[in-house]
Image (cartoon, rainbow, N blue to C red; front, side):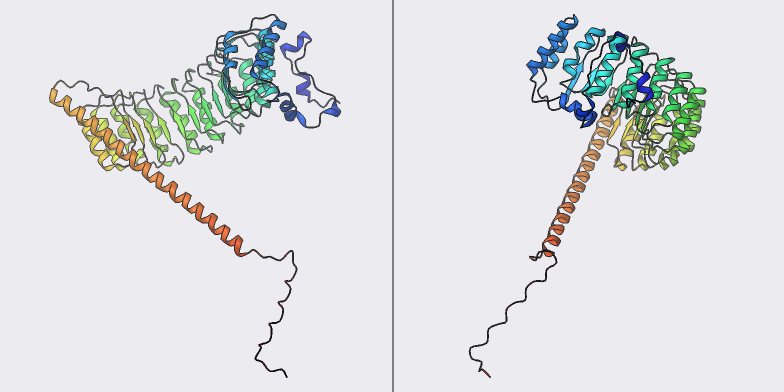
Length: 488
């Protein structure tokens, strides 16, 4: 028995087919502290200086027959502390074949990074496999960006999948602008069944159809992911929206879902709302910008908004809601007690829609940020919003177009400027008042904690006894007789 699982024993990596190995393990009798401690032993921050790391990198490049990358050398020279993670190892656009990746080990074994950026890197299959193995062994990054690296091959994706499953420090992956078809989608989905990732960016990855079905199947069981970004994937209103609705029903950890720039449309929104009705994850942010949604879709959204208890950010921008859509959302938004950020930018509303929104603001006690830019909101709409903010004390920012539009009368243009200035002042006053309240609350908490600590110390002192253990204190000696007392 070797102690390896069947999966480890059969895991194919491009690097191993060359008969080479990168990491050697000591005999069993010397492996006392386990895997993590062995890595710490290799990474002794006091034993290497930056100059020695740079020299080792140059020697490794010479050994593997590649030129040291000037950009990489400059980044290493800029590191100020080896005892904590460096900000970034930026390999964006760098050609990384097998030999180039091998030479990087001298850096990765001595320096850990917050971000390793492989965006657009010409990452060959064997090089990708080798680099992912190193990153796992040395715990090299907490954030990995492989966007636009489309030549990783089967071995590269296998190694990435293994990295995601086994890494104890990697919490964010960016894999944008890569077609996730067939094997890449399968490898990523398999990793997501057990990975510790909390943030996943998959923008523009051709997910529509079977890849999304595979991904959602894994995410239903995932117990770590909190933020999922799926913009620009041509997700449709049929199978894709249905899968996303199922994801909302069964996943228990997601806090943010960004579906911007897709084609969910009104019928797809119905599927999402069905999922929102029973979602268990406590979703806080839902982005639906530019999804071909119209006021007809608000029929579905208005039925679920009053019952959402955790949703804090709702982005409906760049959808053709028009005034009718805002009318349909009026009552549900008044009833909702959780949404603090609302985006209605570029939704085709006019002064009529702005007046409806002003009525919502006048009643709301929770909305803090509202975006109504790129709409035809003229003087009458601005006046309604300004009046609403005289009553509202929660809105800290109301985003409006700052250049007056479509008013030909100079008097009305000046009125618009005055109203915009007044709205900014009212928002600033709300922000100042909110900050003062927060500061007072923080001071009260600090005072309560200090008082509690003093009480604890007082109790400790009052319970103090000079006696050791359970011994009974010795009796006091008898009081001396009064000198004037006559003996019997």
